[in-house]
Image 1 (cartoon, each protein chain N blue to C red):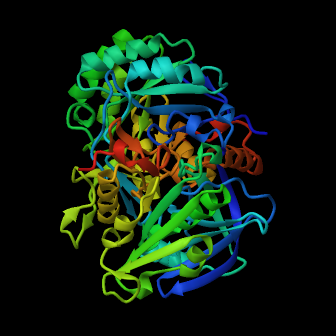
Image 2 (cartoon, chains in turn blue, red):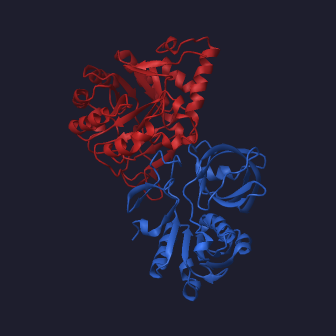
Image 3 (cartoon, rainbow over the protein chains, first blue to last red):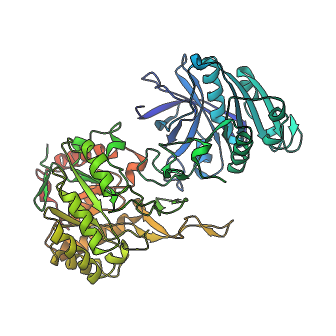
Amino acid sequence: MKKYVKKLCVKNVEFLREDYILLRLSDPHDTLPEMLPGQFVQIAVEGSPATFLRRPISINFVDKEKNEFDLLIHAVGDGTRALTRLQEGNTLSCIYPLGNGFRIPPIDEGKKKFLLVGGGVGTAPMLLYGQCLKAAGHEPTFLLGGRSRRDILELERFENIGRTFVTTEDAGMGEKGFVTHHSIWQTETFDSVATCGPKPMMMAVGRMARARQTECFVSLENLMACGVGACLCCVEKTVKGNVCVCTEGPVFNINDLTWE
Amino acid sequence: MAQLAINIGNLSLRNPVMTASGTFGYGLEFTDFIDLNRLGAYIVKGTTLLPRQGNDYPRMAETASGMLNCVGLQNKGVDYFCKEIYPQLKDFKSHAIVNVSGSTPEDYAECAARVAELEKIPAIELNISCPNVHDGGMAFGVSCAGAASVVKAVRAAYPKTLIVKLSPNVTDISEIARAVEAEGADSVSLINTLMGMSVDIERRKSNLSIGTGGLSGPCVKPIALRMVHQVAKAVKIPVIGLGGIMNAEDAIEFIMCGATAIQVGTANFIDPAVTMKIIDGMNDWCDQHGVKNIYEIIGVI
């Protein structure tokens, strides 16, 4: 897929929480390129003297009709905090779409059931993945985890796409515990599992899927500099050796990783 | 239109803008963003005789105006380059130059000899300055005797243009430059990265898997300029300057300090199209300042 470096226009900045924004971007001059779920954007950060590199942010939602797309940004450091100060009408230098993306099987291979498991800002690519799976005729089910109710973001948008289940560690919403404790693992079977979030969560989901002999794909978010496979900083150990998360990932079949 | 063409040894470049090894992949990673044919030359990533896995993750730490890396020469080896990559590069109009690294003078020389067989690769850049590998790399580049031993071995095996990339992690870089010039290097490029550290104070650990890394980006530019200036006065062979070049004005600074050509490195990570802007910007600067030929300003300081 061709990559672009473009100045995109900020259409809207919505605070979902004091440290989470939903950033809506548009290309004022061209039709947006095709973007796959799991792919990401490298954003240039301005107004943060301590920030030198771009920030990789995964694509959360695409609205082709309006020629807009959303990024969910968690302000965790100087760079992402500076992004929360963006305002409607600002322009933003973006390199995109980057990475491989999740696979969407052709529907003529049969309608499939997908369990999409997200935690924290890792829920971002799950929304787009669900959106694309549903559009292709498949059945996505979401499982979102957080410490408490306030960690569960964009719930309505998930519910608009598919059945959505929640776990919270304090039992403030959905079932109590981690995503791997949810009863859906016992009551239903899925053809495919996908997950994005904190590494311990992804590893636990991977073990659950493996125990059920269900294929499992994870989206990694290793630290990276370039995003295009040049700097070799974002590598993950795989059965093929060290590979770049930015080009050979961020989506990996769990069987290709060397996780225990 | 100013005349930007320059020569490095027997090698003619359409303009002085090259890309730095390890920041530009094999060049192919950037063809969505730029026209490779417009570059003076592009230097492909550090290549060794045998494949290397590099260091463990994490390999990168951001700093206020730059970054540290400890990639450690991950590459698939020279045979992979010759079979899989070279056929994809050989038809571009600008020169592909291979950055060659190794652990002993013998394997540097053998790697160079393999690359010498590739008709459309007119030059190599010898990496005797990688701070991120234990065996070889910078170990050779920090002493005159070590640097000379590698250059001597490679010179005997490699008949085309030989550029030697120097480490700034030394007391007197001009001594090393003179030592490699004496062994027949056609050019020197400098600087490689400066060794540095970055600490995660919560975990009380280094942010880099091997503890240290090489610092690059605009924060190293003043040091790089000083060293280019020093070396350009010390040797007769052409100097290639690099270290934190982000725009055409930075590039002109290096030229004025004595660099015949320049390399753009870390800036490629921030803006993958930056090299095109630098070429255009250098041309504009020359036009605006009545400089008809870039040689008029090389080493004016």
